[in-house]
Image (cartoon, rainbow, N blue to C red; front, side):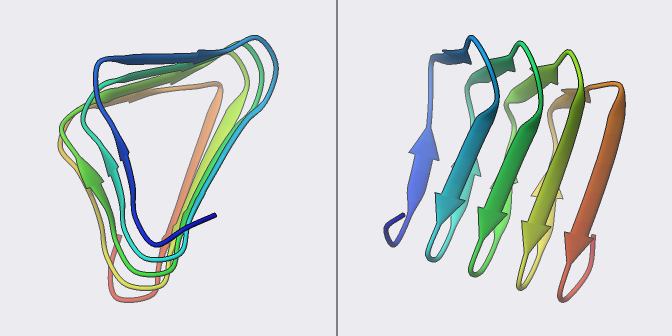
Length: 84
């Protein structure tokens, strides 16, 4: 957990993937998880990357969620304090 989280290129997890950003989470690369995924940000979640999980993924931001790439999972939930 820090101020900002920025993913580019490719990131993968064998099990669950949990990403926490104190401020903004920018997902511009490829994020792959072989189980559940969770992305939490104290401000915004955004990016043009692709997120893929074999199970569920949740995105929670205190402000905005603006993902313009692809999201694939068995279940997707998005909760934005401002909009989603």
